[in-house]
Length: 282
Image (cartoon, rainbow, N blue to C red):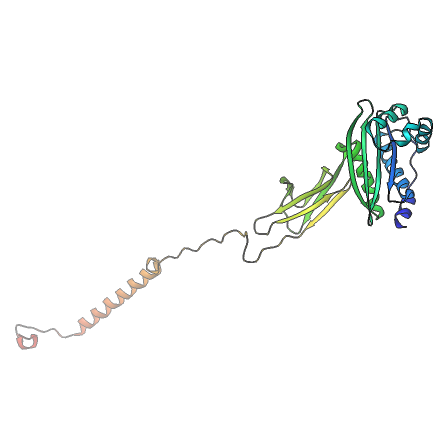
């Protein structure tokens, strides 16, 4: 099976330095191969050990504890019996849960119990696929969400074919493209919006992954019909009769007509109406 082969290639847990305050009591299989569940539990223990920076009780220690205290053999997730197991293991917090199968996916159900307070602190339900990378990351994310959600962070970088576009994540402005790497972002789904005057807005769902940088490349386009293009400056129409050249032309024509009339009148013979009244119509 691909799942078993992928899990088998994962390195063995590191040797840790000291006894810690956290224990994994049991992770039960529900319709899933016990071998697969054992490997998932090993992954979970490994990541929890890194987070606690201390040793967790081994599966062998848990088995010996249950052999000595028979009532614990029936403890499958009850808060009081888990608190009892945690007290015997001398830890402050204890984890228990199960893995169920759903098609080609696996569902990890685990909870964290405060031993002293005898109270459930947190419960996680994580769906994992059979791809090795996704499986490892899902188990790591589950461990962080369970005991150190404040450390569940990733990074984001946004590039675009247009410089100076405004980038916002979940409604909060981060800067402009090309956007430098933004660190310390919450792992999970986010809404990314990239805007710039003259271009259609880009809106998409993105995923920030644990301790990784999500690089998003955005292609901005000029919308058909102008969209949100800046309005064109309207051209003011000036009546032609207010133009300087119009009145210059009128003046020139008037001068020409005046000269023509003057020439015509100067070339006509002078009529003496007193001497020749008949020529003047008298």
